[in-house]
Image (tube, rainbow, N blue to C red; front, side, top):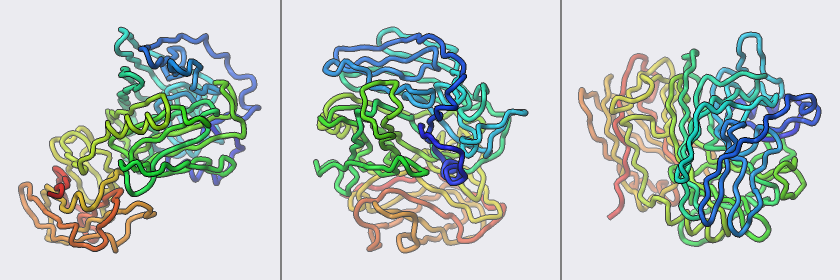
Length: 458
């Protein structure tokens, strides 16, 4: 991300929890290595053109459309573009004698696709473009460090469908450090456009998919944390100009976004210091050997067309999480698991703290999902478990919005059916779940969760 500031603890305390605003100060840009000449590869149809620079990790540095031929992607430094960006500990992250730039020490482990804050680009190690699909594989750079490759591999697959850009992303970790760090927010991906697309638009209300009025999401780029965090209840956000034309970003299994405008300038220049930013977010336990895949879609065009297309693409059924291979964007604290891939269920071992599982930000209506089925195997003494839910606008989980149930020891999967609709607090638009399998620490206890699935209303 981009943000001009001198090192300060307040900023770093924000960044340690997840995301980074990236901008090199003017003095930091002086005397940096010269960037290589661009090596562009393009994918084009009759409505949209997307370009990736193979000299800069294969990050997206160019998008245009038939009716707006100019490039809308900002590339003022190596922390912008559209690029993969992942986060984990430790904080600070050091390699040998190399320490992070003090301005970015709070980020911890942070490989990004384009390059580092010292202007060393990432290396593409494989690519192909057959005119239908564009594939790129790169070794990213650790953003806060000076010329340190990431201990992971990034891959992207890109296809076009009319004005829609479909992308699949994969990060394969190869870290020697096997420490389990706290969950961190991941940019999926980071998206920077020209500042002419200065209006960040999304639907943030409690009546998604009803054509209700959109929200113009504002931000204060002077603040220590310059971006606004918001829930896009239709799962998309768009950066548009004053004529409501621009770039939309859609994450069908998400809902949390960060974004805003940086700088007072409004420019169509891709190298201008001012920029607009948006990123869909999931918080993840980012394992040392994780193979992390996700999909995100983009669209260029008028705002109403972006909304119409993405709403037609959106899954309308209530969430169903099946833990056959991965954690389904759920996070774990106060306990440990066996790592990924999962062997058909999520096996969790309790430690000396009360374990807590939190689901991703997703939105569903309570009246459409009155009952929850949890397939669980529990090894330990009988106990009370508690399921929490959040409604739109809630800052966190509250005991008022929770349901206790008896967790029974068993040596095989047992199905628990929770009548959430029986609670007067289970109503409106729900945005997330959390689960505490035991009411107090039970070291050595174990649980395996096969699935968490809502039963749709008749």
